[in-house]
Length: 203
Image (cartoon, rainbow, N blue to C red; front, side, top):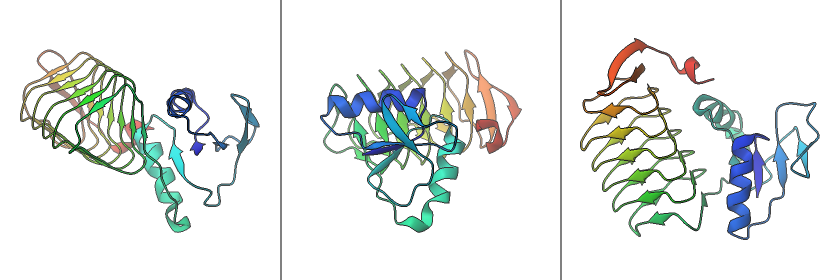
């Protein structure tokens, strides 16, 4: 499997691949000065070699690369650490990554190119739309919905039934008790709207 993004996030994905006994074929990166990473050759012109994972933590950059590669009929992998606990009826979209010790409960749906980070808990019937990043130790109680591209900060808790809109950024350690509309930075205990943001905030 190839990784697109020679980054710290790429190191973590590489370690998950190794834990699963999956061979790493190499890295691609837009930085043309970067020739080698973790002992692997770094390519700079991806032509549809597959399967591949976009190994970049930032939601908007992942989306931009996927859109750029749309004409290449790319096959995206899914990467799940063997220590993750995932109910049989969970749906994980292409390109998504589930990291060590994550727990994902029944009837949860994870979209394309999402990140469920180390030790995160997603209870029953949660929904992550495409390009969502759930940071380490986040707890999502049942029936929580997260819109496209949103970032849920480390150790945040979202109570049951809350809806968070698209391209929102929830600050670390927040307690989210009410719905958050599209395009907001919000944080605190309880979580409060701070300011409106655009997807460019995620670069």
